[in-house]
Length: 509
Image 1 (cartoon, helix red, strand yellow):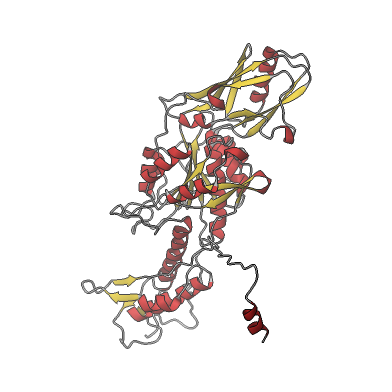
Image 2 (cartoon, rainbow, N blue to C red):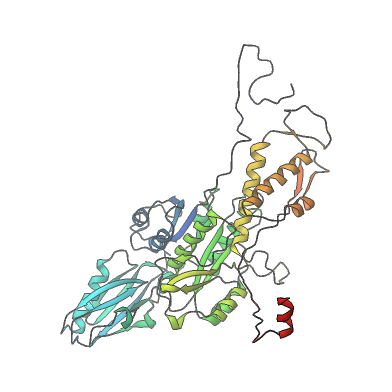
C-alpha cells in the first residue's frame, strides 16, 4: 500500500466508500500574542492573587484588582491604547511588611476671587472650585473631598486644618512614583490657581515613605505553559527583573529555551535623573527586557507608562513583528513639561546604554522613539547588538512559530530515510532534502510577508542532515536573514552657490 493512511485499516473488507480527512496541508499558524498586565491589587479586589486571569475591559479589571489599585491604573493606560489584544492580568498582593507612600499639600492664603484649582494626581486631573473669601482650611477640606470623590485615583486624602495628607491605596515603593502638581498646562491652557491661594507640596510633589516590593515566585510559577508575549512589568528593581528574566530567558527552563518555546518580552520603565539612568543602564543585559527612560518630573506614573507602551508595542508587533515602533503615540500619558524633557543627545546616550526612549510630538502627545532592549554585551563582556531591538525577538518568535507549525502539521508521524531512497508516492516518508525544500518554501512565504530577506543566501547556507549517532533525528542549521528597519536617514547636503560654467555647458550639450 503506497499511500500511508492514518485511520483506515489495511485489512478492512467492507464495501464501498470510506474516507479519512487529513488537514496537514491546509492549516495556517494562528498566534494570539496575548499581553500580561502585572501589578499590585488592593485588598478589596476579587481576583485570586498570583494567578493569571483573562480580562476584557478596564471595568472588569477594576473590579478584579480593586478600583484605584496599581494594577487597575496600569490597565486603564493599556486599554486606552489597545482594545483588541487578548489580555490577562496577574495581580500580586501588596508587600506584607511594606508601608504605603504618602505626602502633603499645604494650603496658604485666602482666595481674593473665585477660581478653580486644577490638581493633577498621577497625571489625572481633579477640579476643585474655590469661592471668593475661602480660607486655607476650607480649601484644604475641599481638596480632600474632591480627591476622595474619584475612586479611580490611586490615593485617598484627609484634611487637618490647612494640610491635606494624601496616601497611596496600596503598600510598596511603587507608590513613591505618584506625583501631585497643579496647573499642568499653565496660563496658556487656562489653568492658574485662584488669586491669593498658594499650594506647597512635600517632596517636590512626589509621595514618599512607601516601602516594599512584591514577591513574584508563586506568580511566575502559576504562569505555567501559557503563552504571554508582551508583559507589562512596572517594576525595575534588580530582584524582580532577575526572576522575570530567568523565566523569559534562553536557558533550558526559560521561555526562549529549546524545551518550552513559549517566547515573549518584558516591558518596563524607570524614572530617574539622566546621570543615574546612565549609571543604571549598563547594569542590565537581557535580550528579553526593554526599560524606558522616563523624566523625573513626568506626571504620569511608571505603571501607566508601562501599560501604554506595552499596549502599543503589542498591537503593532502583532500586526507586523518586523516594523519599528518609532512614532507610535501613547494616549492618556502626560509627558514632562517642555523644558524638562530629554533632549536628543540624552536620548541617544540612553540608546547606547541599553535604555529605550520616548519623546513628545505635536499636540503634547508622547511617542515611542527607539525600542531598545537592555542587551548590550556578549558572554565575554564585549559590546554586542545582536538583540538590541525589540523587533529582533518579535520577528524570530514569528519565524520559529511558522516553522514549527509547518513541520508539526505536515510531518507528525513520518518515517525518515536517506536522500535518494526510492519509495512509493503517498508514503509518509521524509528525507533531509524534502525537509530542506520545506524550509526553503516556508522561507519564501516569510520573505513575501516581509519578515526576512535574501532567500538565495538562506538556501545556500541552510543545512539539513541526519544525525550520525541517532538515525531517527534530523539536525538543521537554520540561517534566516532578518529584514531590517528604516531607523536612520542620513543626508550629506553638498551644496553649491553656483555650478562651474563648463559643467553647465557640458550638461546642456
